[in-house]
Length: 595
Image (cartoon, rainbow, N blue to C red; front, side, top):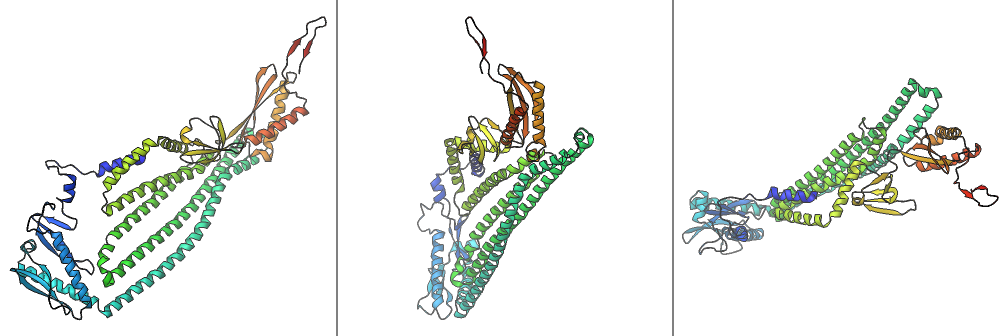
């Protein structure tokens, strides 16, 4: 949907502005017949085309012809200027080819044919001069000179160009320029080796930093439970009365602040390692573009000094340079956007106003959100770069973008479920409904979140089955492990037991388990014995709540049930049993209690 809206906006923004009071023309005629070719410049009643040097494509002068408005119907006696320019350029290339094998420099002369001056070129290989170009009145009128003055000017330009070509094609000049080209090539190879060595060093250091970053990421995940356990042990080592005093409360608050400062310090160090890693990646990126630019400049320089390749020098310095500039800018924008996303997410993660457990979850899912945002930014900027590249090669981008908009809309309507998956996946990440490592329940399916992306959520249930659920099918989620979990322990005891004794035994078992070092890190708070919740024919229902760390409710529940069973046996507390009364009709009727 986002792609479709962007393409529609681009089509509207790049559409041609309608001009009023201009008669409409057929599209084919407007593009092919009434508009001059790309190499022709129209100046009112005249059209001009360039005569370029075969050496380096430099413009020597322009020939002029009357304007032809409809090239499908050329009037008799009119020659399109592009045809005339093409003929002159081919003659000039033939002259230069013959100059290469001539012993002496050809001579440019002026003659007259049908009362019109013509420029000819003579060499020692032919007995007849080569007619080069005939000057016309439109040539003189457009340049603002007389025919004689314009003829002399063009003669001088051509003579200098022929002499320059002859000088560049001498064996001494060729050997000298080939030596320069070899020197440039050798310099490129040495510089490439240096860049390869630097990139190798950066790659090794990058691997070391990535391992450090993963260690810091693991430490930020495991540090909070360990710090909480240490704080709890320190708190439990104090006298029991201290928990009811102001000094004890101040100590507990100070310990919580220490835990938060340790966690934030880990995050800050993690971001520092990530920043160093990004700096190394930026240096690798810079070396890559230095390598590209170095070879581009070197090859362009080689082409510009070798005579047989000089004709392509103009093209080398135009389109390829623009292409490199476009993708350098796109690549730089991608890197800057990724760095900005990392900084924004870091400032969100280390916010001191967020509670510590919530900050830990934000730190865990910030990587997933960052990768999604970076992928979106890369995709959008790459599309912009492709459009600019197509425009650079004179490809009608408006038509392509319009076609892309239509295709995007068709895909959007045809894959609505996929779009719903992506949108719901974004909402799940933003709202933190669940994350990797959580245990959730979706309708009648539940398990550990093993994989989460914008399209699907994969769960691993207790039987080891991998359950894949499209994000669009997720409406109601029960998260069993977000921030903390709970064991809802309930047991039915017999009416013959003393209720106060039963509650005292449960409190002793709960407090003893809470104070043991092996279980204190899994119980952030003392278990809460709620009391008697129900009375029924089976007995008294007693309930205990045990608040646990995420993912610890099952191990804590199993251990607590075992201890309650042992404590009830030691204190002669009997479990409730279903009871029924049976009446036997007869002389010796009695009441029998069934077990």
